[in-house]
Length: 624
Image (cartoon, rainbow, N blue to C red; front, side, top):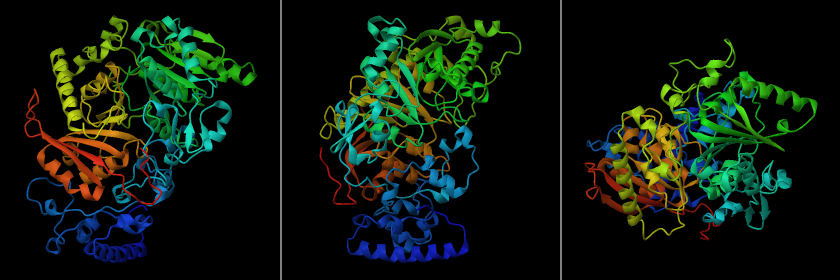
């Protein structure tokens, strides 16, 4: 299914195939046919390279007079370019085996390109995006029997089996209550490897270990953001939500392949990632708690580099809760690991906050005092003073301790208000960008107004439980996500890797998100978000050497059938999206200008679409 074969004979076959496909599709177009009627259409209709856009203009519905004149759709907009007149009729469908494709986490691609990766440090589970000639330019079909997902909060405890037809975890983890098959559904009893009897009891036990009031782990709003490493199906994070704690549940696409897919299907925040060689896509001092329950990570490898990555991510005084045999087993090997790990965290200036039964909770220091008191030459060393602890996109981890800035050291903490006040309280790190408190407050109010307008525009299409998983593709300071507080949703706030690194402001507001480059595919499964918010994201991509058309196909991959996309962009980009509505099986819901904004944004237009339930088989049903 991939594009761009290199040998000569294959090229001849490709051009012959293109010629035949163009004739067949032209015939179908004339007689009103559609390539979406066949389940096997993907392999024959796949677009091979950008050259097809030029050679096969009839495929895109162009007039014959324009043959050979088209250029990539990202080249220019609203300048009278010939391509502006092309009206795409359809996109090919990827064949069914790609229904769970994650383009930048595709192990088949690694094998095909014969990448030389170090498996011992998990490089094969990190992001490796396909070159342009191997990108999939087709729509990803849902699995056979796909149904509209179960609504939140019921979805925390059950999902449709047909939507994620993988039951190996139910059998493999049957003794640990991860998940259980039950008729047409998969049920989640709330268990885990080290909390067979339920995440709720385990969470209360941790709060008790730390002497938090009422056995509530949120510690009166002071503990808000959590990183769960090796999260399984994310029951830990799912059960924390009722305590006003939001968790970034993290796991790779490994032998337990679909754990993050299950988490997102359940409506629980989650992200595909691995502690390997690259920094995680989160800024420093983002989490009050990191958690690992039997996550099978060798924390001692490479001079403790993975623990030092957690140290970078923890706030001053933050906790690392570790439930694993090393914390309690008395056999020789586990005792050795415990001794070496205790020595390592001691040199990192962590102290034991509590240790009980299977769990130990370490705490990070509040200041730099302990670091300064270490003997000269103690390892791990402090990171270089000019190192940026918030640079994360494609940046290698370092086996060093990230010290606090003078301001944080003097403050003896992050200086954040407890939740929920921190959502709207100007955080100290605003000063890193030269932003004033007034700017922050105006931005918060502006996006509250805009979100109210969005929901009004969608009012005929949505109910209180229609939406759950939301992504803000250009989150800036996180005010769009903040405006969702009183709705039963959560937001993945995405910040561009080449712009102001405002993601630390977002985490300081008690929200979560990730750094990303929208010239590449996002680290998530298909059909995982109910709503995407795309504020000038197409304009941004068009300014780069990237394809807005590719981004539309990626957005279609991410959004669920019956889900929504809110575009807020300049008129030429809105017109560009409208050209592709039929091809993408999207339906226009509403259009509005920004004239009612308290802050005027020139010619920005709001355009909302809904993804249709398009069919590939008779078994694709809407059972909402």
